[in-house]
Image (cartoon, rainbow, N blue to C red; front, side):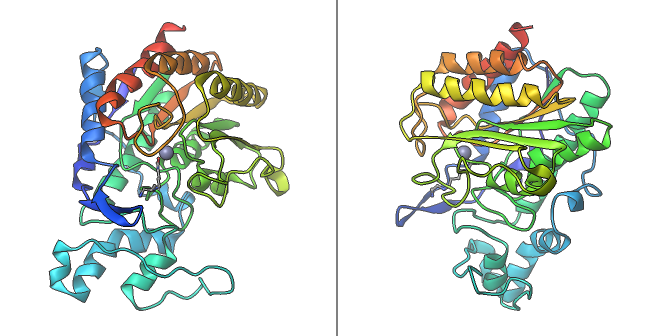
Length: 346
Ligand code: Q9C
Ligand code: ZN
């Protein structure tokens, strides 16, 4: 299976994030992608840079004013104070219920709040370049499926599934899985399915496709009553308007074992098959691993091969997009297990 890897990801290397009242080194680090690519190369999978420019397709997923903000955010931050070059900006106020989000404030930190869902998504000088390169990979993968590839994996970061049409969050800036799904629709796939197996609910992807019947969104994840992103991902979210019945959430309690997780996975796969998709996008988070430092499902290494096999049995061309997974040392082996499980299930 071809692996797409945008080396520009390295430009996104924030130092630290807020975690339980402290600033700690970022869990979402450049070494994650480096370890994944190294492990895939060692396992014999060919790696190449993205070939397509996502610029023209980005406004199909994200609001123009959000893209304009994101692209110029670091320049705006520096314009405020040259000493900001050494500082990470964080939002501190958000337009929640009854506050207006239609008018962009002039204050940079206020604009950052307008376009963020949390204070856990550090932004640095190279964030736009890295996120844009990841989006290029998602688009390139869709083009490779169109040209006849059975499956392609984007070993990119930052991740994307928490990013909505007009906000960043959960380490995500551009929704790569949504972009791949839209690109596949452009390539003539009448029906696309996005299956999100990250520990966290893919709130951004769900919201982007919530009223659409052509792109099914199915996800199994930590119950939002106790797990990030907290405010979306419940079982009663089934879609709206024409999209009613095309959104499936399977929330699972923290501590869920592999057996219970696979029961939910099989239910999600069954729903995806019933959609009869022409292409599948997998939001491949590996933070379901028992050793993950910020999540609490209990999958072991071998379970990732089982995941690859189950995804293969859905039986359609597949784009894998790397999302979460913070046990960096084991992340490479776990991705390889998914890919090899997928290919060996043929
Ligand atoms: N400061 C993904 O897996 N923050 N995002 C947790 C740590 C939210 C995870 C608290 C975790 C987001 C793509
Ligand atoms: Zn996650």
